[in-house]
Image (cartoon, rainbow, N blue to C red; front, side):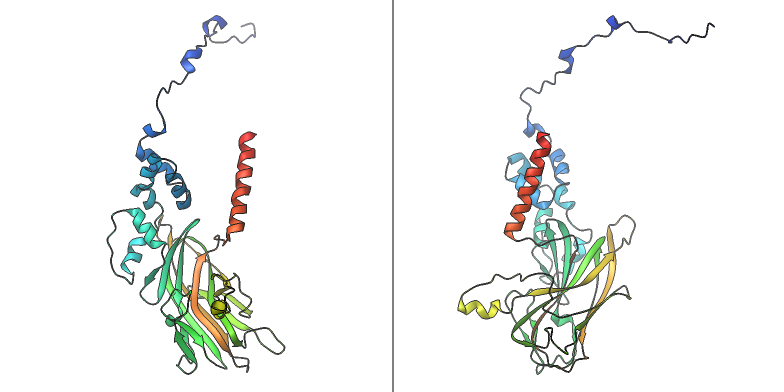
Length: 325
């Protein structure tokens, strides 16, 4: 050994040959339409329902794949069969998973004055409970009226005629996909309302929410301090002015988290108790419409048309810069 390491084998440069023709991918007349529909359907599973609908309008093959049960089975919550069984309008027959998804997006009335619906973009499960399911102190015809009102999801809403002590409590036990949710009270104030606004000597309403028998939120506020603007369209017509003055709003109470129950199910069971109490003030309260409570995914934001269009344009500009670079 002379101390010099030698390679075990060598390859002369002349032995390495590059054949450009071997690297050419000859597609010929093969196109997107030649891909198996099942393959395209699996790709669509990763898109949102709104994106799937947009792509279905661009190509007949995409449209065919977008109707596949494979696509919409992935968009349905794990407990959708239980929801269908609890629907107030009874059992219904569906010939595709897409029709089931569309049905669940249309606000399904459930037994017990509850509602269930899916968000299309982003996907998410929402629940609501009407005022008729709530425990209202002094809920007699003298103090409260049960009336129908435009924009409500329920047959009747609670209208406060006049009370001195206000106490409303409710509870709900349900299954939800794992994630973080918000709870809000849906309400409206008409022109004759009083006792709910800020003012000297007036005390705020006490809001509370407990999750699985553990108090998680205790807050104080006034009803006009709502989280979101009205969902109804305002009108300048005199005949619609009265309804515009009592548009629905939502008062945000707090967040809660749903943890996974069964292994790999992606669902969790949660028990909620909530209340709004105003018993420490002697001011009379009147003119309140109470529709119930709303539970929604926290990551869902409401955009009007202008804000949504601006967001889409910003995304397109960013995507174009990325493609050019």
